[in-house]
Length: 158
Image (tube, rainbow, N blue to C red; front, side, top):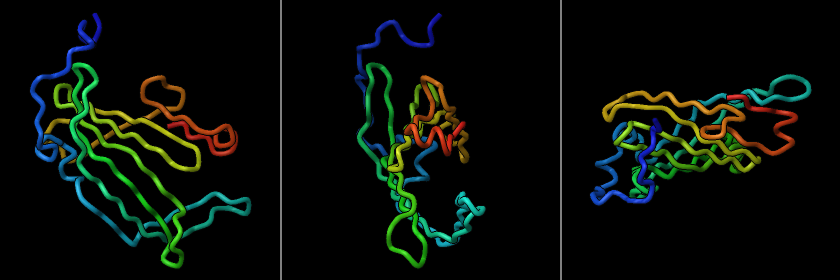
């Protein structure tokens, strides 16, 4: 028996127009957040480089998204990380946080301009206050894909 419906084409007829009200466990994330107290340990040939960083993340509601009967509510996000002494980013990341109310599925899509993308998944109740998602290299559904160089030099397993 498949976990998916036989009818993969018919879209929901009732879609909540107020995304913010339909975000379930993601609703607390919406907005603009920042901090100045992160610490990065960056691998270098002579040993790890330690840098203090500041981070800003914007999470904005998007219109509901349907894949046939599957319906997601979500947030588009952009994360920008730099050091107090530099304006340029040393980490930049964009993607989506998505929630499917019918199943409790939570997804995070991740795109990093060093040549890496990922989609992580987990499940949560509508009022959950914590989320646990996972992506594993090589998985066809919820995995990690990187450039050939990253696969060689800095491979992410999960």
